[in-house]
Length: 209
Length: 191
Image (cartoon, rainbow over all chains, first blue to last red):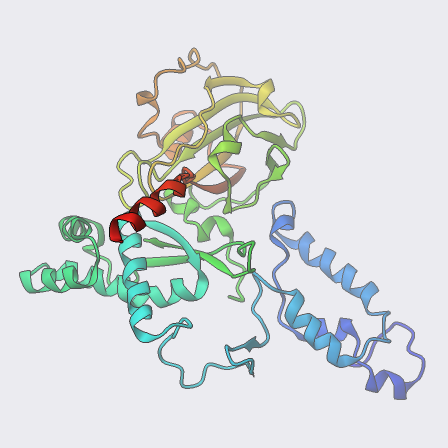
């Protein structure tokens, strides 16, 4: 992706320095910012971002390393990060072998957190929390709904052992048949939203379908 | 999430409230200085007054604006599905709803439990509508169980031309507990 119609000083220089435009063009298309989404829901948005990138391409003095870092940092919130930084500070771009989301907590606290979140979701129907927590919660919420679908006394007691409030369990067991009777799995939905103000944590709404 | 999922589909507004449509008329909604985007969070305290809605279009077009809450009384049990918050008809294009005829006066979001979605739907009218007399402010009971689809079918409005939704939840009441005297008395008891 090195060929460009714009004036390049010499072939040697253009081969070594990366242009912002070529970097952006090589990436999958990124979503436009949410504020602009309203006016330009279809094609005009893509044209506007392409035009702004074209004038950025003239800054060939930028070192390629800073391009990459700024690309990962500036496109935060809605777009997929190119890489992530784990709790130890190491940069990892893959999820190989990771089975359990640890949520930066010891196991007892983690279980308590998930129990609390599940209780609240089943009680209110829609809650707003951080995206990793919402994704971790899905498994437990769907497990509870599956227990309720079964409906026997043993399953009810198992649900009572997990959910903190017993009226929530009884209400769930009463209404799950007509609500999720035909649906096989997939009882929750996660909708990402704007990041939190204090720490820029990516937030999401999780709701019962 | 690389795919561009329309936020209205993501928030299940298309499906719960309206059918799939193509937005043809740009609409912008503003509460005070806060511009709305799909799915943003608005506090009920700033949404007490009707928002400033700017509708593009020629002055000869007439629009109908419907604002409903599809999660009444609670998103896990929407038994009163679609509580009507606001209904304005005969809005000329390029203006805001104050130039139209208010059928149902604006009621600010009042989410009792959990997080509710509030959907603003815009329909284009083929002919000027003759609305019934405006609803009295006290009759909240008449607003429930409204269906936007049935409304548009009854008045032949067809598919909406624009839609927007935002979220609102009950603001926590800040409790100030005066603990200046409590600690000294409890310490005295333990000693």
